[in-house]
View 1 (tube, rainbow, N blue to C red):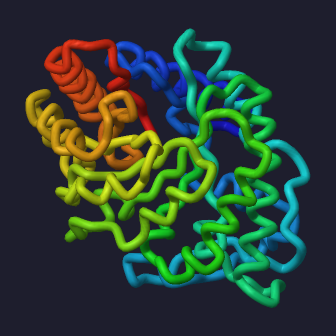
View 2 (tube, rainbow, N blue to C red):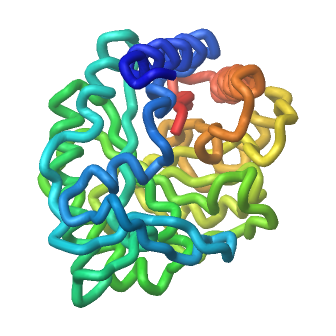
Length: 312
């Protein structure tokens, strides 16, 4: 796409993503993140203190080197990054909307630190930038803001040491509905996922309102969800490692697994993670099956509990 037409093309693709979610019956829609190179890079490279000409490298969770932002100065947010996206989404749907931002711990894990004395110091400044962004996203019309922190469960000791304080710094003074997403990685990239989280219960003490977990591909032992206390659980019920579309009954079974440990009115149903590696048709069919599965459970409960459908 020619540079002068890129924004228009991205807007058009975003409208398609919005309409597909609406047609599937999703209650809380996203913009599809069409404008993002990755879930973290667009925000991380928009900050001051990053050398855009000389990227750094880290070893990713796949064990391979990956290019990442190189931190060469104080990390600061100079301008809003996703506010325009939020306003566009708000103007083009009458449903609740959710916008995501990368978390400070994950951005620290995915950066080459050539400036700060410690990773904890870097995470704290990332957290300040995320906090500023979240405030602006709510002001722009977001109903829900999700903080993506997949690396917390990958590095649980560090997450306990400075990841949780950084997350809380990102949440300071925030009054809107917030979610932290903790997963095992994209289904197409990470196989052999464990049936348990090494890091999860620690989030119960934070002020985040909702915790997003994956249970489908990993066949998670849902008893761990009881450790989250009164948090709302965004329950991943779609396996994104395969293009096979789950029957609604399978989705319903995955929801039922959580009900002994989480009250139904504290469950939001979602895919395990992002759907970027699926074709549009498969993604739509999976979302529609998810909605139907949630409706099956809702009917069984014979109440007005909020077993809702959302997209991460």
